[in-house]
Image (cartoon, rainbow, N blue to C red; front, side, top):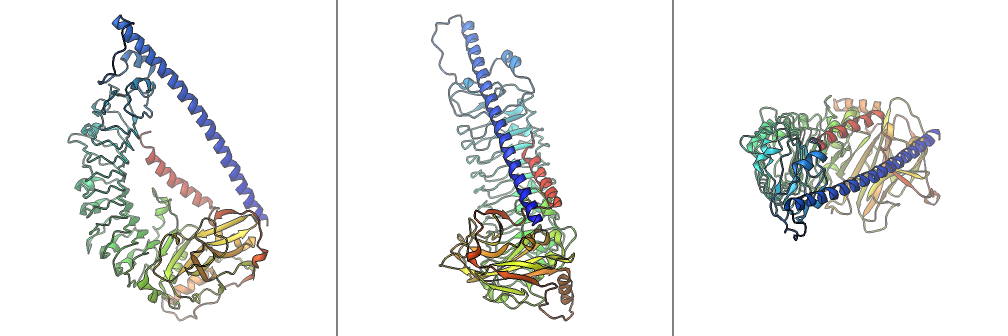
Length: 628
C-alpha cells in the first residue's frame, strides 16, 4: 500500500508540474504577443516616416498618392541602419501578394523585401542575414538570388504551394544548415549549382513535394545528416551522388509510389541508421540477391512495408546491425534462412503477407551491440519490440500447434528476455492461432475472467510475467470497458488503470484469419499489479471476441532450462512454475472504482530509461533546430 501511495503521489506531482509548465508557457505567449504588438506599432511609425520623407523629397504634399509600385521597395539604408542591427535575425514574414507590403513588415522582417503585386522575392543587400522564414506563402512562385546573403543559416519555405523554382545560387550558401521545402507541391527540381559549396547543410525536408521527379545533386552538400522525402509521389530516381553523403543517418522515402529502384550507390552510406521505404509500391529492387561484402553496415531500422516485394533477397542477412525490420504487406512466399544472422533483430513485422508460407528460422542468439535503436534519431517514436504475423493465413497451420522447445514464438520470447537490451519495459507477439492456449501458460482462464493476485513469492531471480490471449472477430457485445483502445490487457486499481494495448487497429484492419494469439511480456520493474492487487483482465471493443487467456511468471531458471533444451538436453516440457501464483477470481459486480485514470503499463520509467529517452530527444532537437 505504501508503494501505491508513493506512485499516486508521484503522479500528482507530475500533474502539478505540468500545470505549472502550462502557466509558464501561457505567460510567455502573452509576453510574445505584447512584443509583436510593439513591433507592429514601430513598423507603422517607420512606414509613416518613410512616406513623409518621400513626400518632402517631391516638394508637393498635395499631389495624389502614386500607384502601387511593381519593383523592389526596400527601406532606405539610413532607416535600416538606425533601427535594425546588422546581425538581426529575420523572423516569419508571410507573403500574400498585397500591394502595400511595407505596412506589413516589422523592423525585424525587413532585412528582406517582397515586391508589391509581383510573385518574385527581392532581397536587399543584407550581408549578415542568418534566417529566412517564408513558410505558407501561398503566392510565392520563385526564390530570390541568394548571392548577396551568403551568411544564411536557415531557410524555411515549407507550405509555399506555388513555388516552382529555387534559384541555383542557393548552392553558394556555405553556412546554410537547415533547408525546409516541405509541401512545396509545385516544385519540379532543385539545383544546387555547379560551383557552390554547401558544406554546412545538415537537414533537408522535401516531403510532400509531389512534382519533384529526382533528388538534387548532393556533390556539394556532402555533410547532410537528415533527408526527408516522404510523399514525393512523382519521384522516380535517386541521384547517384547520394553515395557522397557519408554522414547521412536518416533517409525517408515513404510513399514515393513511382520510385522503381534504389541506386546501388546507397549501399555505401556508412553512417545510415534509418531507411524508410514504406509504401514505395513500384520498388522492384532493394538489395542484390547475394552480397559478398557487408552493406549498410550501420543500418538499425529498415522499413519495406507495402512495397509489394515478391522476394526478400538473401543479402538481408548482411545487415548485421539491423534491429527493426518491417516487411508488412508484401507478396513474398518465404523469408530467407539468412535472416537468422540478424542477431540484433528485436522487431520483425510480417503482418498482411498473405502468401507467406515458409518461415524456417529466426535469430536465436543475441549480439552485445543491440539496443542502439532506442538511442537514435527518430528511434524513440516506437519503443516496443515485437514479432508480428497478423493476417498471415498460410502460417496458421504451421504456427498453431502445441509448443515445444523449437517453437518460433517461444524461442523469440526467451531470446529477448535473456538479452534485455533488445527491449524496453516489455514486448509482444501476434501470430495466427487456433483455440487452445499453449500448455506453457500454466494459468488459463475464460475470455471474460477477471483475477487478482493475492500471493506471489518475489525473489531476485524473478524476471517478469508473460500473458497470452486468443482473440478473433466478433459481432456481439464488448468484454469489459475498452475506452479508446480497441483491445488491451488491463490492470485496474483504485482510480487507476494501467494498460498494454494492441498496436494493430482491429476495427480498421480486416482479418482473413479467424483467430490470433497475442503474447505479452512485462518486465519485473513494471509488474505493479503484483503488489497492488489490481484486477487483471483483457478488454476489447465489440468487433473483437476474446476466447481465452492465460499467464505465467518467468524466472531465470526458465531461461536457463530453455537454453538447455535447445542444446539437445531432454527436460520435461512444459516445466512447472518456479514459484506458484496464488490468485482469486473477481466478480464483475464487485468492480466499482469510480472514475478511472488510464496510464500505459510503462508510465513509470527507470532513471536509465528516462536518461536514454531524453538523450535521443536532444539529438533529434539538435537537427530540428539546426541553423538557430
